[in-house]
Length: 287
Image 1 (spheres, rainbow, N blue to C red):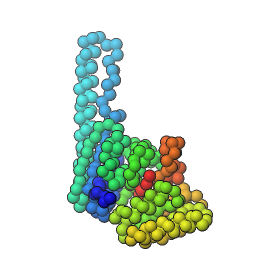
Image 2: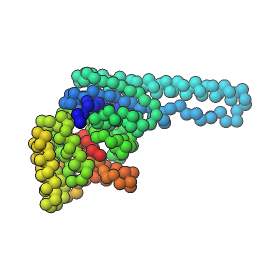
Image 3: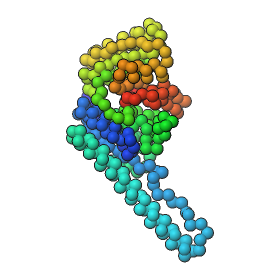
Image 4: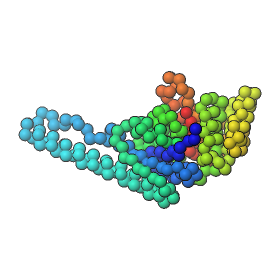
């Protein structure tokens, strides 16, 4: 079955990471020829509140106050909508300047996950910043929307780093699991990874099973025309991978997201969370 061209869905919220999301989307589009759809979601918390603030005021004054509050709500809703359109216009300008020719924008009201579910069938990847507008940088918190998107999306999620730099060297965390195997298959079928330097790494002891798994993954990539280096590192994935990314100057990390059990699906796996939080490079998560 031949795959149809699918779009890159880029979620922008006006935060520091929005520019990086656009820059990475432009890079991705340039290498794959895929169109880009920019989405900004006006969350329910941004919608006007129907709270009765009039209290026990005399009837005439109460009616006047309710009318004034309704007018203020309408003005606020209009400003929020204008801001959303401005965010999309700025994002569109970044992509246009980078040479992306097929760009669509969508301003959506409601829940972010509902918006992602609505578009992901036609998406090849969902792009989002590591942190959102309300994130606490000092404490290293991940954006709450990022966690929700990773849990909900069935497509690869591209987590943009704070700033963009050209990507040429890719580290693939391979543990032999289902999602890691899917990650290798994704790389093999995706023109994005052609001519990039690919390294497959397993963290742990050099057991025969680990060596065989790496060898099989390397063969799968070679069959697709991609040469990959393989290695096994001692230690724990949370620390060993982050250290390798920094010391060997990798530009991107690809890894499986987390398990599919009911309990595991409620939270992001600890290794995944640690890697997204600590890595200063984009992280591509495969379910």
